[in-house]
Amino acid sequence: MGSHGGGATPKGGQESLELGGSNDQNHHGSVPGRHRINRCLDYGYSSVAVKITLVFVVIGLSYLVLNQSSYPSQLFQSSDLCSSSLNLSDSEKWSSSLHHFASVDEEDQFPSYTNEEINKLESTLKEAATEDGKTVIITTLNAAWTEPNSIFDFFLESFRIGNHTLHLLDHVVVAALDEIAYARCLAVKLHCYALTTAGVNFTGEELFMSEDYLKLMWRRIDFLRVVLQLGFNFVFSDADVMWLRDPFPRFYPNADFQISCDHYYDELDSTDIGNSPNGGFNYVKSNNKTIKFYKFWYKGKDYFPGKHDQDVLNMIKMDPYVADLKMEMRFLKTAYFGGFCEPSKDLDLVITMHANCCIGLENKIHDIQMVMDDWKRYMELQGPSRERNSSTRSWTVPRICG
Image 1 (tube, one colour):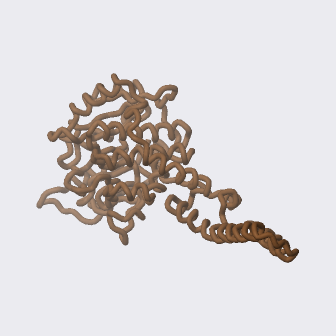
Image 2 (cartoon, rainbow, N blue to C red):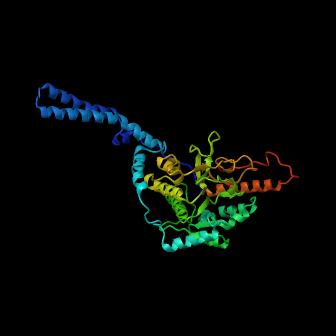
Image 3 (spheres, helix red, strand yellow):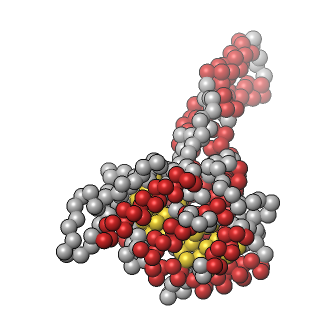
């Protein structure tokens, strides 16, 4: 259930013709019209009304020709705001929906939930919230990840062996995707919420980019939007993220939305949208900006079918609508919030370790076990009398993953 990057292969250029893009045929198609007008004038039509009409026709044709030459640049500017992996029809559909979407007033706030479900969720969030009553830690879980010595066991253990992380378990809400996961959550005495989806069985391991995998990812985005609308900040964490230090002191205090990265580029800074985000770990504050952003993000599933939430995030992070929200977006450095895509190099700095860039449950389990072994060995060498060197301060993973 972790997040991965992805993209689509662009389609051919034929669609640009259908969307009104400039091409030789379009320009040449207007020339015969002007030639016919000239021939008509040569034939000596002297009617004042006809001449006036022809003048307006010539002006109109010229206007169309000039606008045809400028239109393509506007179109490509729009498509470039998303991703090079988009074809023009995708970009056009998305752009045409924005003005309507941005102007729609609040509809039913929770269209996919009954009143009973919302009341249960709000109650669970209140019970799990931090001392200020505003923030929770959320993870999603299905049966495949709850088996003995599986992902969920490692997730829980990381809080227990981490540096000042045990108390954070009191604020974890498990959004259980099936009955087995819900029962396991209750057994370990965490805050549990049954996040089921009608007609979908999330019990087994979801193959990356399968139909059910995509439904799961988008269900998660919609659920997190509801949490924000109920007034709660959240740290969302995939269950394959190991919590080794308390992340809150390292978060940017004024950011509305901050997210971990598959790759954090050293030449960029934490505000640069050129960084490569990973939806498996993020901290989001509840306000009108983030609520609108999550609605906008969720809308992407309808306009980019077959793409998961992380793909769409990479497309919309540069969109003018997102810029207009004035939402402060920050990208978390992999030096602190690392993963198998780009491991943090110094265990003196590491806060979380994510088993991303790894497909297959057995592969994840193998390398996460190595993460836990590395961390335990590191922690045993703490203290002034212990000798540490570069080898004891760095990871031995990824081994199978990555």
